[in-house]
Length: 390
Image (cartoon, rainbow, N blue to C red):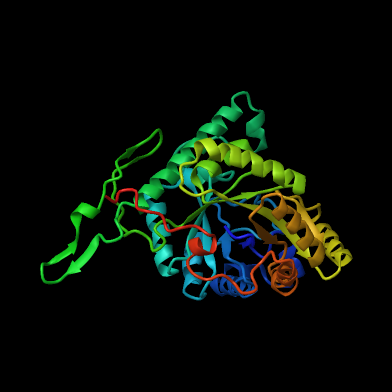
């Protein structure tokens, strides 16, 4: 992997701050127009980002508040729409694995890899509050801090993450269930397929039973990029075992170094994939040329929303030079990239390209020109060998 960092952008509504839609002066319905997402994707692509993530959920959070954007478009459908309207940037939609089926996930993500010509990834999410009631398949504990304080909470959480790991493993096997040269298309003999190069995956796990093969040929990348957000040891274990990229949430450089050591230690004994997991720091950003203006804007938005904005990762209201310095300290601690969450899609996303990327390039942390190729290419990941191939 190069010393230069991976740069990702996380899109969410009008931005990650709940008051962002007010400040931008746009109607909330804008986020339900596919053209809006194409515009944001093109901005991130022009800024030189390696990939985008699209958030998703199967429930509407805290619907009692009517002054915040509620509802969303399906992340996978959005990524497919954006794929044919962008050229280079990777597209990484989120799916909730505990409330969906691995067969469907594998074919949908493989299709995205085809429509994007090798730019697909996947953000694995266990689930969010209220999803079980909407899907109605089974009763699951609510994921959150309260679960960790329950008498058997950590054990329940570990079982759910083990199930998520099983889900990822099955999807990966389904992606490999067609060998790369399974399609013959030989008109003279009338053979379209080499039947010996389609494989039953025959998985019977604790929670999943799948025969296979997939209905979709092996994706252009072989395996689209699998990513996971992780805050603590149990999700670190899922990432270290099964993912290509993990997003972590360090408070500072010392915390980043501790997280890197913890993930690498798990990876050394438990990793299933052939290459090391790429570790990216998640950062919410409010970015202005002057840090005082950034802090002032954050305070104004907090006042509009009625409470201070608190995220699952640190919020940095600052100037581009200070943010670039912070990212540099993360890189020195072993972090291999950043996933930036713009507080406002209309103000902070353009600032990434106009202000932050030049500062990172001056420090040698980003290449002068955006990387090309498939998403795996840009992340320094080889195209994996098919596990069923002779």
